[in-house]
Amino acid sequence: DEAEPIAWSLKTTPTDCGAIHIKRAIAAYLGGNLGPTARVSVYVGEKSTEVYTYSNVCGPRLQNHRIQFGRGMASRHYAYGVSDATGGQLELQSLDVEIVPLQGAV
Image (tube, helix red, strand yellow):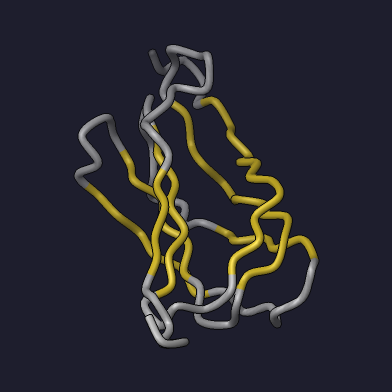
């Protein structure tokens, strides 16, 4: 593309993280190099009906990025995405999500 930036995005498939209980996604930890305009999304529910998007506030260097989610999310299934409409850099080494099961919810 003649050195023009290319917008990109990736999304995981929905998962229940191996547990049937309703749970809350607290934060995502991304290891790697994300550009300053990268955005992280969490899709709540099996049908991805709610999407929350967060800006990457860390600079573009190899590091751990922590994205704190809002407290209103509760679901059995979640999917996660990373995107950059400006075609910024991505070198993703890991994606881990902090999950907390809700007491008594199935």
